[in-house]
Image (cartoon, rainbow, N blue to C red; front, side, top):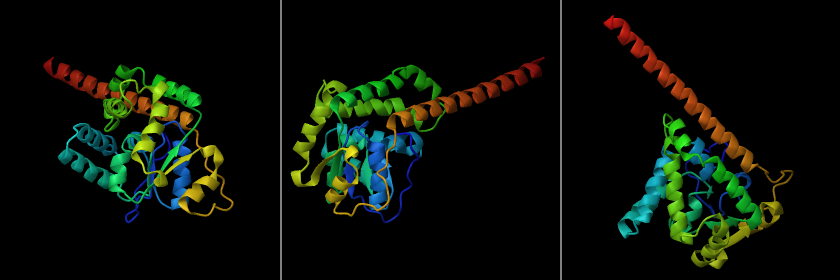
Length: 262
C-alpha cells in the first residue's frame, strides 16, 4: 500500500497468487515478482487506494457476492475477479489474501505464495495500521469528495466480514495470523503452496518459481509502514483541498444570491 499503482498489460497471464496477509512484506514481494515475472503485479492495498476508483467498488461487489454464499453469485464473483485481474502477472495483499480459493478456481495453474514474518512483529504492525484508520468518522467525512476512496471504510468493513468468515468471530490480529496459515494449508494443495520470508531474498522465491536469480539486482526492500502513512496523509490533504473548494463555491453562490436580492 502506498506505492505506485500498476497498469495491466494485455496478454499477461496471472502466475502467482500472493496469499500473505498485509504487513508481511507484500510491497517488497510485489516488486520482486514484477521483476521475475516481467509483468505488472496487482498489489491490493496500492491499487485500491491509489488506482482507478472502480478498483474499490469492484472488489466490494466481489466480496458481497461471495458472502451471499450461493452458486450463481459466486460464479458472478469469479467473472469479476477474472476481469479485474486481466493483464496482471500476480496479485498480492488484501482483499486477495482472503479470496485464495476463488483465485485458484479462476487461475488453476497459478502458484500460491504466502509471505510470512514474526507473528508478534506482525501484530504490532497491524496495531499501527489500525491506529491510522481508527478515526473512521473523520476519514469518512474528509474523503467524501474523492471518487473511489470515499468507499474505503465500507471496503474495510467487508474485508473484516471476510476475516470473520474464514477465521471466526475472534479473527482479529491476535489470532488471525496463525489461523490464516492453517486455513491456507486446508484450502491449497501442498504442492502448490509456498511460505516465503522476504528476508531470505531471491533464492527460495526463484527456486519455487523455477527461475534464475536476477544478476546484479538486489531484492526490493519497500517500507510498507512509511508508504501507508504517506498514502493516508495524501488522501486527507486531497479531501481537505476539495472541501475548501466546495465551501468556496457555496460561499460564492450564496453571496451572489444575496447580492441579487438586495
